[in-house]
Image (cartoon, rainbow, N blue to C red; front, side, top):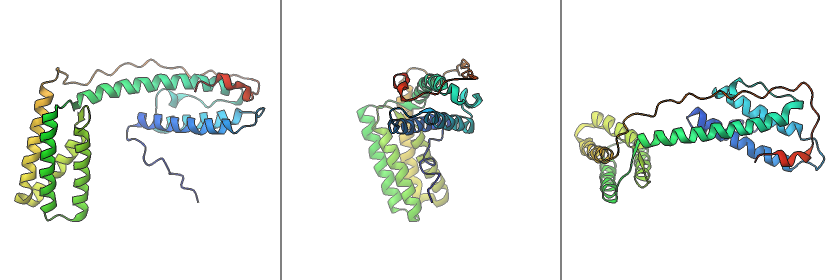
Length: 239
């Protein structure tokens, strides 16, 4: 029996990003199905399957404006397809810009010396964790968080997410195991100070950019009648 959840459980936690991921996946399925059609075959169903999938995803994830769009009928499928494709690109660009600005608030650019110092401290934390009397599952979980944060340190901008996850775990273990984990807590505090010092050197940007008022994208109008179309529509496909 096929696994209907295959490829779904690894979607991004952010609903808008998850919608973009799904839509791109459905686009790839659409292109494959379209390429397999005979030259004069009616492509209507291929368009409709794609559009029904993306609109179902939009409604489930409550993605504006697509969640409010009605499903197209056979006569309006091509126009609907073109309207959706353009509106989706508009939505995707806006999403990319908003998340890029957000990432800058919750990240910092580190110089080489600071990166080297942080990597040294991460190594010290690993040693403390290795020597601590922790169950193997917990050690492996911490090692994964340390590895994720170490990878972030090597990027152009270091985000704070994995640093926070690592710090929270260390703080919890320090409360539970006391002196055995205290050195790790001290190393985490040193890392936090290095990140804070680097962030303080950047231009003031303490708040997220204000939420922009998004212009409503009107759904395509349904056509009462419309001709069937075939693969001759190749030139109308925007991707």
